[in-house]
Image (cartoon, rainbow, N blue to C red):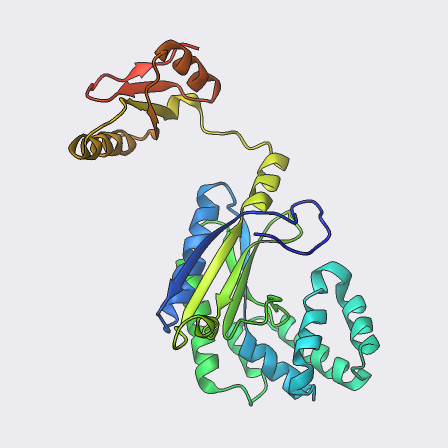
Length: 302
C-alpha cells in the first residue's frame, strides 16, 4: 500500500497491510467475525490489552444532521473530525470554524458527543442519539457491540466512539478501529463498504473488511523487546528437488504432522551443501530439522 502522507513513526508512505474481507454477506455476522478474528490475532501475538472502537457512518451522519450541518458539507466536517487524535478537540473545533461551520453547529455536535462519552451503559448512550437514525441501524449496531463484547477474551474490550470516522469516504455502515495500550494510533481498522464493488461489477455486492497494520505491529513489538519464537519450537523440513504431485502431497502431510506436534515448520528445498544450509538455518533461528521421507527429528548443531 502507499499513502500521500508525511512519514512518521509507525506511519510510512509505503507499507503493508494484512487484510481480511468478506464479500457477498450483508448480515452483521461479517462485522462480528472480522472484529473477533482481528482481536484473536492480536491476542496471539502478544497484544493482550487492546480496545475496539465501534461506530457507524449512519450514526455519524445522524449526529451531523442533528447539528444542522448540510449533507453537502458532511464530507468536509468528517475529514476535520478525523483529525481528533492528531490535533485534539480544541484543534478540531477551531478548524471547523475556520472552514465555515458556525459556532452553534460545532457546539451542538460536540455537546452530543460529550453526553455520549460521559454516559456509562450502551443502552443509555443509544437513547441519546438523534431519532432520525433508523431503528434498523440502531438494532444492528447494538447486536454487533453486544455479541463482540460477549466473545472477547483476555484484556480486549469494546467501546462506542461516536467520533470515529475512518477517513475513507466509501464506508457505508459500521466502522471500527483497534488501539493497543501504549500506542498512539490504530493498529487495525475497517468497516462496511457495500457500494464500492459497483464500480467494477454489474451490481454492487455487500462488502466488509478489516486490515492490520504490519509495520505498526512491528514498531510496537520492537519497543516492547519482543522475542522471536525460540529455536526449540522452530523446525526446518528439508525436501528434495522435483517432487511428483503425490510426493508433494505426502510432504504437506508430514509437515502437518510436525505442526500438530507443536513445531513452527518451514518447508525448504534441500541444498547440495546440507551442512552449510543447516548452519544458515541455525543463524535464522531454527533448532531442528527433518528430511523428507524420514521420521527422525534432528537437532541443528549451532
